[in-house]
Length: 270
Image (cartoon, rainbow, N blue to C red; front, side, top):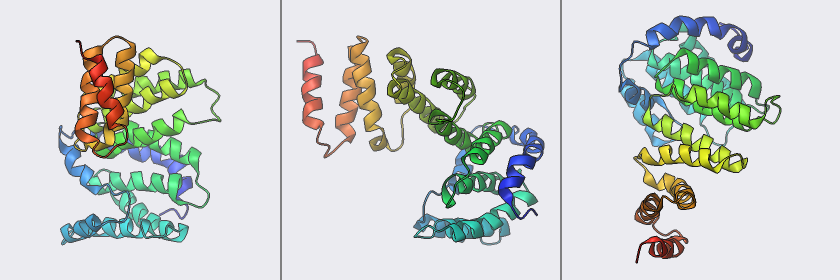
């Protein structure tokens, strides 16, 4: 095992992932839902559930332990490095199963977010390798979303923002998981708006994201308002009204409810 995984990941993981990619492509649709159960963004009771499910499964047990170490509050680099050691073992021993792929993702995430001095370039490269090597896998597509966000905000890039977005659009067309497709279109649409590049392209992307329903619609209220505004701008009044009504249906307690209700009334034909 390599003592400095960031170097190992940056220089040697390509060959390992290339070997794993073929096996990853054999997975059928829907398997990503089981794999998604291995995702944890913070310390939570669900990690205890994962520990309970790991009875008799040593890899899952080690994985749950590493997650617990990673998300100890307050966050400290020393805890992340302990978790990193376990994720390294899990990945090195089997880069092809669910735990191995999830471990590759979290090793990259540690470089990205959990070190005192994050290595953004290593994380950027590793996220892309994971995406390219594990097509249609949950953590492969999640890695793409992280890569996407780094690229969109990469102030040191020699490419223009418009060229970066064009390259990302070609990659984004490969996504297969609804939540990831929605996240991709939303991020790119927001970029077209935020960088003031194209309202038309922003609307095309955000409209796609809006049509992919979320199991937690409360997280999509800003998307609904963006789609409504752009739909009105482009004369698609029915879409604007529907998006505003969706907002009212889920944004309970939002201070903008009164304003949105008045806008619906104004848009409705007399």
